[in-house]
Length: 193
Image (cartoon, rainbow, N blue to C red; front, side, top):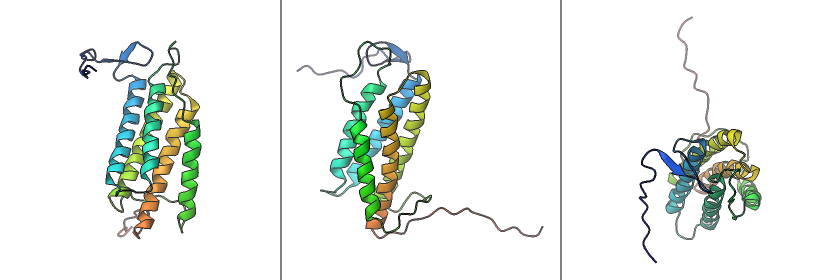
């Protein structure tokens, strides 16, 4: 098999190819969304690299990364393209993530939802990074959806992903016996009125 060359030079003037053919500017809403999805997927790779061998999250995170690659194929292809991706949309994966979140919820002693200061340990903090990057990707998908329809299952998947990362961060903190750092409004003392 011949070696591929990643440098095609076709993007040197600020455009890039999209699914189904055609070119768009590299700051097009579709490319912005794809970039954030790619970054979210990379943050999941960092998270997986932090996990100890045979960790119970490994298979689930790998599945999510694979689903991310599949849904990026859909996002990369304009709805008007004659050549649409044949890969499945992530409908079932979103339901599966909901089930995983319920398992986590059932395992936590305190299921109260509140704002947390990201941290705890490296794994929990990386979950929060993945959560925030997924939220940004979701916002970019909403922007793209205003210009060209995005499959509802893609939006749902990315929304569930950020929710799952929050739950995983909490689970990690609880498993390690760490105290969750709950956000509290900082009110400086007033001296004299």
